Image 1 (cartoon, one colour):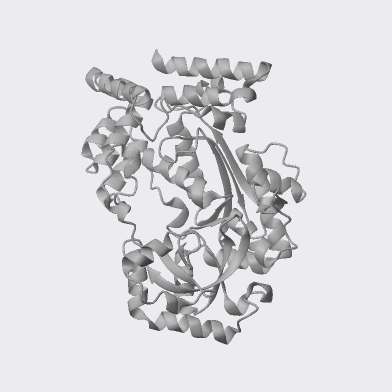
Image 2 (cartoon, helix red, strand yellow):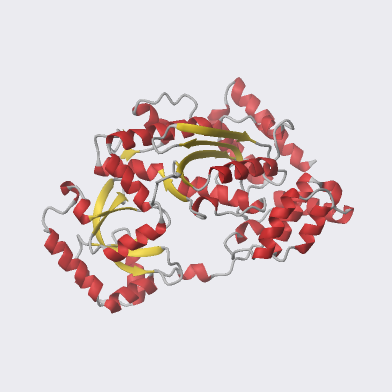
Length: 468
């Protein structure tokens, strides 16, 4: 990943729950820095709750958000907040976007927010921008430069890297943990420790943040060390060699752990290999080139991570056995296809359709026009959209932001749809009123005392408002 003349953007968000499709961003914080991680600019935004989303009481407890504050009309709407975020991040781009556990969590929430508000959803990894994850940096530093960052150990002696515990352990007074801006500041502090004390690990983070760089590494290197978590939660490095690519998901590569004998697996058919790959002790692991795997060429790997009972020549010989066995690599590739991926999605919710293709250029232009159109012109833009997903999302935005532009028939239909969504009795992937009440009851002792009782009252009032 090239870093010359490129900004760094560190960001964090707090949400109404853990569902990337059916929860929403409530708070967003971001800091723009230069290459030495010195602050240039910052943005902090909070917003109101959308009326079709019920927040998780547990999430509100963790982030210390009062249920009553979610309907504060002095706050911007979700659409207004995401517009502000998109404009600012666009003005900072191209950049390298960093978060803490962002590739697995924050990144998907941000994409959904952009998608659901008619913005291009791949801002952080297109048009010259790339991304990185400081949690991955902490894992890599623990393995490759263990005296740089001091992890928190649990009762079983396993290293843990939760930001609210890791930052104080390493000298950052993280008094406002789970506040978006405070978490951004803690993330930058930890990143700066690595940049200053283990710059070679920082450079490795930059090199693996771009999927093409990872793909080039996998195709050019016979032996690599994959650093990360193993079964049981321990962190270590495994010596691996590439052994296949998912034909339906080109970002998913298979790697074989060279601590095992590859010849024992050469005669297995595709189904047997799929079974092996599903086991805890499988020598074949999946690596996603677009999720910043921690890969290090063997020549750059510290001695303590290499097997003590094998020389580099031994490892290379094993790797070449796999590389030269085309049939085995093909069967591994076939085995990587998850047959459940081909099952059709039975739910027709627009949130689940984010990855069902790119919008065409005409619709992309109309989506931009939608944001700037005034009054009834927004209706005309909506009618011109070809992509049914964008039509539905545009109509929802109008219902929330400019309901006066919609006919009584459309408004009534939208209200009924939301009400049914919140009260449905079948099992669904979003939070219903019944699910929210059950989750509130499950908090039990956490709700004892005046603060707890006030929270319960506020949350129940919020739930009652959905039924009015």
